[in-house]
Image (cartoon, helix red, strand yellow):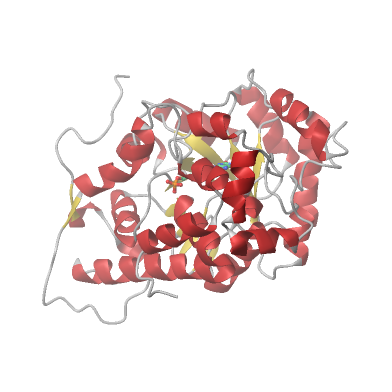
Length: 388
Ligand SMILES: Cc1cc2nc3c(=O)[nH]c(=O)nc-3n(C[C@H](O)[C@H](O)[C@H](O)COP(=O)(O)O)c2cc1C
């Protein structure tokens, strides 16, 4: 096994190990992928202030997200179909996060079910919930999360309608994967992945099959999915979801100060500035450019977190110094998972942690909880601000 020193290293191994259909699914953004690309490239437009001869001893990356202790303020974002990137992927990722001391968020569209992840892990995890039409299903999803002792719910509000990713349509993405001559030929070359999949029964959407009305087997699932999402979603409806869950609540997918104020009024404990990793509105601002205006609007009243584009600990450092109280990685841990299972997710977290810790030190800072804009040089015009 080569020496792994970066997320880019994990990505290279990931490409070798995971079938094309699933790495295309993770790697893609919507349409031209402008927002997907800028999510990452915009981080490199912000400069960090190097300081020397400042006491850098006794540093700490420990913090809190929604009042829960974290070893560093970097959670694992909800990622659908994680169990297709690696056999039992959700359980593996949740275990790695639990041991590292950071939150793991299970997607509604996971392969392993809520109950399955709870049974096979020790640390409490967070449950991501999509805003679906079926009230009974929604209430049961929250109830199941409660029964599984999930310590927070995360409602994703940016998927009323689905952005288009060209490759997924061309690949006929599905779980379990559709077997065409091309996909079978590709999978045959992914021996580790194939053996893992043969060795597990977890190959369908575990939170849906057997739980949603009329979905008793995988063949009825695609019809359900195409009708389940609610294009008529509004804030009153989100308020109803809030009543279904009495624990800590995070609202994910906020890109506009107006929506941030609405989320605050719903009674959320935190919001995530996120454009779904560039998978929804192509042409939207990168998340890091959208962050300052949202912080100005609600930052003193609610915890503001961010995801989309984070690939390094330096990115985390910049987001925290700008004012975010928490960050999340999506693809960065999926690369680790596909490359090496649980050990790969652990490696991804170690890489990001080291980059965060050492870069913070080189900025002359010792505590992630007291970072501020003083260590950043942000180019003029960088901050995305809409006219009121
Ligand atoms: C393959 C993939 C699947 C995703 N599935 C979900 C999901 O089921 N629910 C959700 O709220 N967000 C989902 N997201 C968005 C992530 O939670 C997160 O916002 C995004 O990955 C952050 O960007 P990054 O990958 O650049 O870190 C998904 C992202 C990816 C890449």
